[in-house]
Amino acid sequence: MGLKDLLEKLKLEPYVIALFGMVVLASVLPVRGDAAHGLSIVVKLAIALLFFLHGAKLSRESVVAGVTHWRLHLLILAFTFVMFPVLGLAISKIGVLPPTLAAGILFLCCLPSTVQSSIAFTSIARGNVAAAVVAASASNLFGIFITPVLVGVLMHTQGGAAGGWHSVRDIVVQLLLPFIAGQLARPLVSAWITKHKGLIGYVDRGSILLVVYSAFSEAVVGGIWHKISPPQLLILLAVCGVLLAVVLAATTFGARALGFSPEDEKAITFCGSKKSLATGVPMAGILFPGPTAGIIVLPLMIFHQIQLMACSVIAQHYAKKAQQAEA
Image (cartoon, rainbow, N blue to C red; front, side):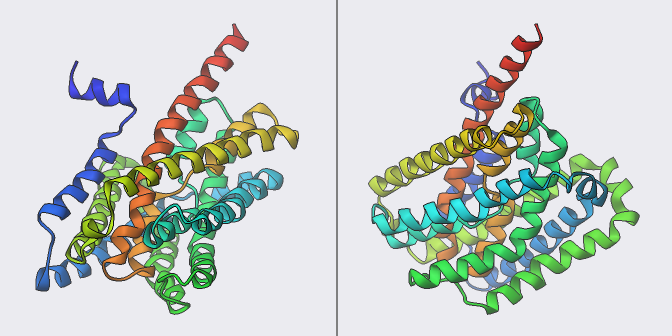
């Protein structure tokens, strides 16, 4: 059995392996001093490019086409920006995790949904793909505004390290403005982006890998592995698993209870239960400057892997049921 077959069997994406590889690299060879300062500038430029591409890729036509399905979109936004933060706040109050990891859980609960994987899983499950496109895109667009506000309010009440309301300004400058620029440039660059999807994907993922390496380098220099023990990591893994299980159950049965069609239920389940690594890692670097960012994104990276594994299994289950119904 080859490495690719093993990863397929374990539902592990090579990209996710690369993410944790950046953690290992930063642990062994963290960037320091002038090199760290230079890398921080490169990271800011990479983040700006990342969100420019997000803006350029988002079709305004798809947003207009799906906006009429307002009940579905409101429900997904409620799961993403209401239920998740409430659960995150509850977890932080239980005290099973140290403050920094609890803050990381609360931060991931404030993030928007994923785009690519939400749409992909909805498609595999034979769900309402058009609704998933609109819902996931809207979640990310609103998240640029909502996430820093939620982080500022919830982590202020918890005595967290979020940077305050000036962080909203930084989000606007580093994320929203490039996103808007991408939208404005879409008529000029959309054909090129469509033609070079593979290259754009590498730029997308390469930017995130760079941000993770930079954040964890600062965390390692700040002594992250002296602050977090192996038992705490195991507890974090369990907390992320339970959190995802609760939200998956809530999205699935909530959609059924409210009378949505099976196709809409799949879109709600996949869009309402996931959190975006592509948005979360850059935001953490802005909202939590210094070594804190590396610890803050650790729960997000673990949750991201668990959600990919779980949703892959669920999507295949939905697809088999759909095939059996057609037979």
